[in-house]
Figure (cartoon, rainbow, N blue to C red):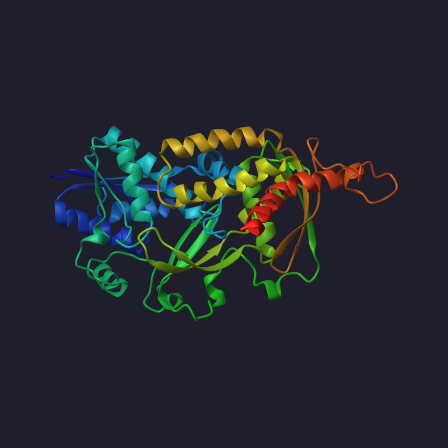
Length: 400
């Protein structure tokens, strides 16, 4: 299939900066770049200028933070989804949205392909490729890093120097970093040694917990149907709320994760994550769920959260099962309304209080004080019925 026009997911980083030139040389095609503002905390206008400077015919830059948080992050948040119990899926949630935007531009511009800078052993290649064909089955997806002759980051750096391509990476600090408003990931370089302690300079969203304030700080988060709507009594939109939560939790060193995780392609990868707002808000949301959901609903939610996290991580955002799980989560979160109070101190966000008009907690049933309304004598009958299957099984075994 010949390629005349390509829409490239462009970050301005090492890989995508080199890719613009490489696509032109390899395919002789027109390259249009797309850069999404997901809250990278950097000026994107220079990235647009850089894309045009290295040969792109058009350069799209779009602020999609609100859509990202409302239509992607919050869906996973309602489940409390964490991949392998730790990763809040910040990068994984951004990829299907970026792909969706690229497909829209491809249709508008008459492009016959999209391209991305993912490697052949990473997760992002799957998220881009699978999302693209789910949205436009006839689109061609090009991933230059999977096929080009540049076999290392050092060779890419040399290639960039050869063609005067400005890049933000040096051989002295060869980390691969991806950041958005929901979190940041760091990999490569010295971090590939699993027995190497991450240097402090790789962290940019959180304070070193040992150097965080010596006095705890309290924060109240208000939720409405599972979505955070206010911080310390002040109502605000999601973008502002998450920004403020990042600043607040980051100041106290909250949200650092060092994990050896299982990539989709079958290898293990050492990843460093920072997600101060995500971890603080998820901790609060979990506490609220414990208050308003009955036992069976809470336990099933936890089980399905694992599946939801896998679907996101594996690139299956645009599938029927994910949409069905969203419907379940929406129903489950109808009563997830209330206020949670946390104490932030030296890298930990600890829930210290919670309340909700839909709380299932009853002090009259839980207390051991004189106002206890629980009928204790019923406990014997309950234990008899509950243990009956085990009793019958033991009787049969003893007969044999």
